[in-house]
Length: 75
Image (tube, rainbow, N blue to C red; front, side, top):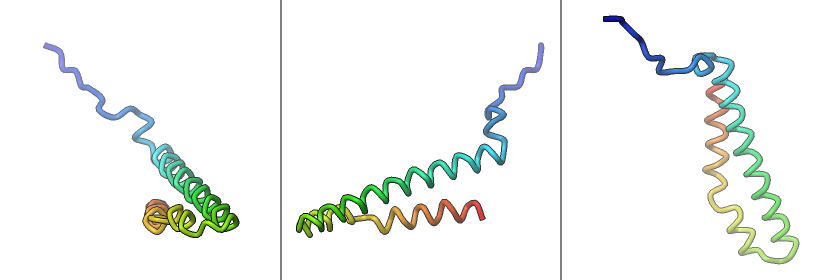
């Protein structure tokens, strides 16, 4: 009987550089989403829709905290 081992992790997942790149990609994505929400809030405020701006900003603190946590993983 032959002994075969199944690789559970592909080689690219074992690389610190690949993991770092995925973390940075996630941070970039979240930061882009935050900027989009802030842009929406500015447009709403410019149009005098303060409640809509408040809606655009709802929960943004949590997303900022997530980005900070992700970036701390890299330090």
